[in-house]
Image (cartoon, rainbow, N blue to C red):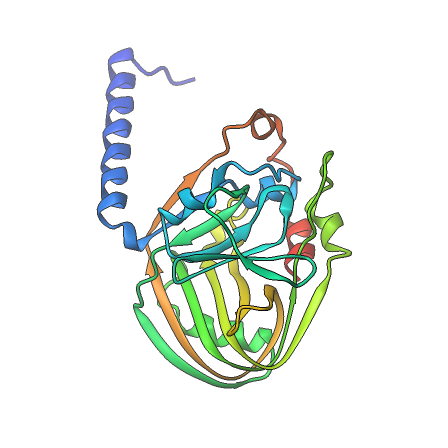
Length: 264
């Protein structure tokens, strides 16, 4: 075993603290290029649905994003600074600032790249074309697509009661919704592979229609024509829950299969 002298140890710790403070300051200066996230996707998969911060606090960190709500009560879509809740009944409503969230991702959307997609036949083709627009797979991207859709299929999760079941069990019986010949917006993110367990690797997309009467987590879509906007994000800020439930939950178990079941 290699022994590190106390003086060297304190030097390393001091260096790390300075670097941490520097990175925090940089994130604050470059806030519009930073993704802000509350909790981890693995915690949500394990059934940690207690809200930890309010929607108002979340909106202090971005005007664009997605997530869910306390007790897993529906899907969250943040667009143009407004947070919408897509309930398991299909109802959509604006959310007050005091409602809490157990998991969400937000950013200040600032377009870095744009494109026009036409005649996209399914979600796999959509993801393929979006991937070809990304200059690197080592950073984060916020993705917005406003367009006309031939078909969109979404789902939303119903409100849960304690003891909370795991998310994969809930997803197996989730209500789904189909929209045909509709206009709307896809809101989502692409995250690097190395955040597996923290966020959803690759694509995580939600949908809301133009008149704000329907939406949810995207399962399938056919796009007639869409205006694509991509925001590059090199910063990532993660806030972990303060609850005892989070401190006790086991997050070192394999959860890849559960995530695939939930996302598909």
